[in-house]
Amino acid sequence: MRARLVWQLLLLAAALALILYVAVRVGAERASEATLDAVLGAAAQTMAEEMRSAEGGLVIDLAPGTFSMLAAMGEERIFYRVDVAGQTVTGYEDLPLPVALPSALAPTFYSVPFRDAEIRVAAVVRALRIDGRNAPVLVLLGQTREGQGAIANQLGNRAAALGLGVFLAAIPLSLFLARGLLRPIDRLAEAVGRRGAHDLRPVRHPAPVELVPFVTALNSFIGRLRGTLNQTETFIAEAAHHVRTPLAVIRNEAELALRQSGEEETRARLRGLIRSADDAARSTGQLLDHATVLYRAGQAEWAPVDLAVLTQEVATRLEPAAGMKDIGLKLTIAGPLPAVGDAVLIEAALRNILDNAIKYSEAETLVEVQAQTIGQMAVITVSDRGRGLSGVTHDRLKRRFRRGTNVADVAGSGLGLTIVDESAIAMGGSFELKERDGGGTCASLSLPLA
Image 1: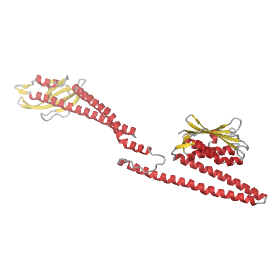
Image 2 (image 1 turned 135 degrees about the horizontal axis):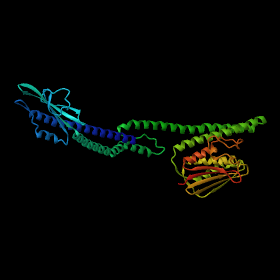
Image 3 (image 1 turned 60 degrees about the horizontal axis):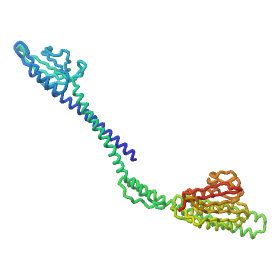
């Protein structure tokens, strides 16, 4: 907008400068032409008034003062012609006559080409009594206009210089005006930009009348966004409760029926139901975790988090699951690790990393968890002796609903590593997954230190 406004102001200034030049040039030409016509007409009238009749003819007195009057306008060529009763008596016989003869002593002006030059001619008619009868005397006085062109060019050059000066002065003035006109928008943008991610209050910053519709529309959008986010948060919370709880009830009832049933066919069906309930609970949990990550990533207000404590808590909650598969957890934590992030996102990332390590590891193996500081980053590394990546690239496994080619017999949704990667990116960190020497997988989560 600023560039467009500046260009429009400069175009306006250029148009005004051009109009000024044309107006001065045309005005100078007309003024000089009117001035020279007045002098030329006065000289022609003087010549006509100096003529008098005498016995036997006409006396023509070409006074030097008449031509000196014209010489004052510059070095010009002068032509004259005097006709009595239609016959040329002196001057240039080929000097062109006017289209219509003047009817009084007032001069008539016209321009004609003559002797390789464009000349301006004044024609005056006077009646004299010669040899006892009235005879019309026509006086033509012509002059070149090179001086007029020089005057017009001089004034035109001055007008061009003035127009250029106006245009050059308009450049900083346009920049200043554009900056002043757009300053309220910049202030409004700065006021909105200073808000935090959770600040969804209506904008009350003072704004010009022209920006009131924009501010009103912005406040309306903020209100709709606030309502949508509240609905999203409520939906996630209610979905977690209304989906996980029935699945847990189904699983518990199926386990109770399995203990009480004596028929092998019924027991097989109940075991399949329990596996389906576990798969549904796991998929539902990861889908809700993913929705939580997406929601909190857009609403994040990072705070100091001790990764050492958080890692210990997540590992403690997953120890029973590891114990059921005879998998050991070995924690190596190098003191406090004050990182910056969202505790919910970090916990979701750590839970999915450890859950994958336990889920894909063989029985009676060891999952090693190491938390340490490397440079300006807090790094949590989880190493297992599981199935490895089987040649599948790290980038492919981080995509949603993508799983490795060697885990078809293990329940999963393909969202765990996606949750870890999106959580790390949202907090300015990174997630890396690679093959471990000797077999297995090594997953590393890096987050900025506080």
